[in-house]
Length: 57
Image 1 (cartoon, rainbow, N blue to C red):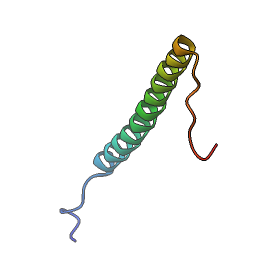
Image 2: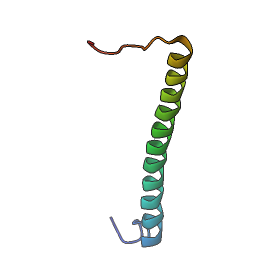
Image 3: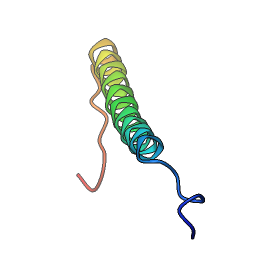
Image 4: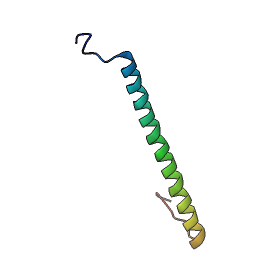
Protein backbone atom coordinates (compact mmCIF):
# COMPACT_ATOMS: atom_id res chain seq x y z
CA UNK A 1 0.00 0.00 0.00
CA UNK A 2 1.42 3.35 -0.88
CA UNK A 3 1.18 6.25 1.54
CA UNK A 4 -1.52 7.90 -0.55
CA UNK A 5 -3.77 4.83 -0.19
CA UNK A 6 -3.63 4.73 3.61
CA UNK A 7 -6.29 6.57 5.63
CA UNK A 8 -5.15 9.56 7.65
CA UNK A 9 -4.51 9.35 11.38
CA UNK A 10 -7.57 11.52 12.04
CA UNK A 11 -9.78 9.22 9.99
CA UNK A 12 -8.42 6.12 11.75
CA UNK A 13 -9.10 7.78 15.10
CA UNK A 14 -12.67 8.58 14.15
CA UNK A 15 -13.21 5.02 12.92
CA UNK A 16 -11.88 3.66 16.22
CA UNK A 17 -14.15 5.95 18.24
CA UNK A 18 -17.12 4.93 16.08
CA UNK A 19 -16.45 1.22 16.70
CA UNK A 20 -16.16 1.77 20.46
CA UNK A 21 -19.40 3.81 20.52
CA UNK A 22 -21.28 1.12 18.58
CA UNK A 23 -20.06 -1.64 20.92
CA UNK A 24 -20.97 0.40 24.02
CA UNK A 25 -24.39 1.16 22.50
CA UNK A 26 -25.10 -2.53 21.99
CA UNK A 27 -24.05 -3.30 25.57
CA UNK A 28 -26.32 -0.54 26.94
CA UNK A 29 -29.28 -1.70 24.82
CA UNK A 30 -28.89 -5.31 25.96
CA UNK A 31 -28.59 -4.23 29.61
CA UNK A 32 -31.63 -1.94 29.39
CA UNK A 33 -33.68 -4.57 27.55
CA UNK A 34 -32.85 -7.18 30.15
CA UNK A 35 -33.88 -4.83 32.95
CA UNK A 36 -37.21 -4.05 31.25
CA UNK A 37 -37.86 -7.75 30.69
CA UNK A 38 -37.04 -8.51 34.32
CA UNK A 39 -39.33 -5.74 35.59
CA UNK A 40 -42.22 -7.03 33.46
CA UNK A 41 -41.64 -10.56 34.74
CA UNK A 42 -41.69 -9.35 38.36
CA UNK A 43 -44.92 -7.42 37.77
CA UNK A 44 -46.53 -10.50 36.24
CA UNK A 45 -45.42 -12.69 39.16
CA UNK A 46 -46.80 -10.20 41.69
CA UNK A 47 -50.16 -9.98 39.89
CA UNK A 48 -50.64 -13.73 39.56
CA UNK A 49 -48.82 -14.86 42.69
CA UNK A 50 -47.18 -17.63 40.68
CA UNK A 51 -43.42 -17.68 40.40
CA UNK A 52 -42.15 -18.83 37.05
CA UNK A 53 -39.57 -21.60 37.25
CA UNK A 54 -36.65 -21.80 34.89
CA UNK A 55 -34.08 -24.48 34.38
CA UNK A 56 -34.12 -27.78 36.20
CA UNK A 57 -35.55 -26.51 39.50
